[in-house]
Length: 377
Image (cartoon, rainbow, N blue to C red; front, top):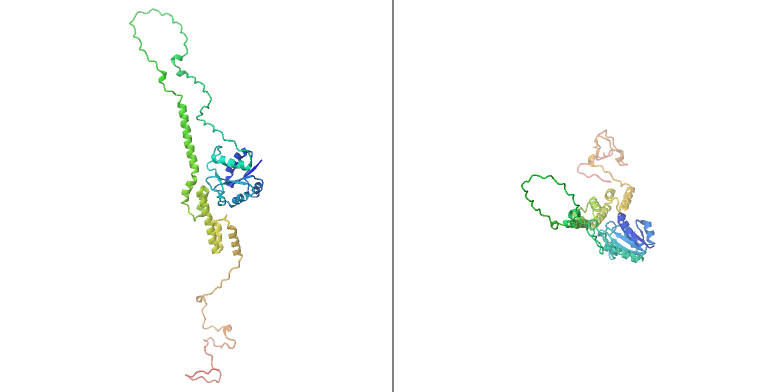
């Protein structure tokens, strides 16, 4: 039995199961819901690999790498949902668009996908779809069948078809009554014609046709509404703040189609820009702020490593300078500090008086006369 592996996102498990059930009708071994090493092990024995792309899977780098690796092991067929395009690496390859498929056997895109899978797997193709079952409201007769003649209702039997009435017994003779004036003959009443009554047999047919038309309109409106969700998301996308990570995440959760893809790209751009700014700042506070906004970022490991590196650095010593205004005032009566006096000089005992700036002359040395220069040694 040929093996077919479906690579899909975890959020697309239900569509993958529906696709697998349809493919198993062709006697294929379909494997889904595999990731990591289990998926790679299944791909080794696969004849055909189906890449199921959606707005949730065409941006996951891990799935893209798995599909790229599967091309060297099996035949890869791309299938898209919700108008999702294949990633950039596979833009030149054929993609079967399953948007709007709800499991119908005669859906053209499904018939194309089934033909590709069975042809690549080397198995018999699926049988052609049969006619759809008639609606429960109106079931037209099949060709070749002769309808049984309708039995007339008792109320619709004509006088000529009325069953013969039993003869009533002759009344007993009455006693003779005195002669009286003759009664007037009763007026002849008109017998109603049944041909003039409206035929009621066609009313049920008309009601059935109206019901079918109403269901078709409602179903078509619902189908159009589902397929146009991407367009409605694009209108709301214009109102989202591109610089608000929380607003972008909230929009991605509720949107689909091209608008969701654009929102994911904007969130990645905002994440990269925030990381570049935090790395340029080079502070623990800036890096921690980035991690608070993007805890699951691909740069989170690098940011935490830089924080640990900054925390391990010794603190930079800061020279404390005391302003001049904060110096203690000088006491004029205080004796000079011996550490500030030159070694060759002795601090004179002034008894608390101010110390003269010019040293006193030596003993028996004449004082210089005013107006003369002091000789130098």
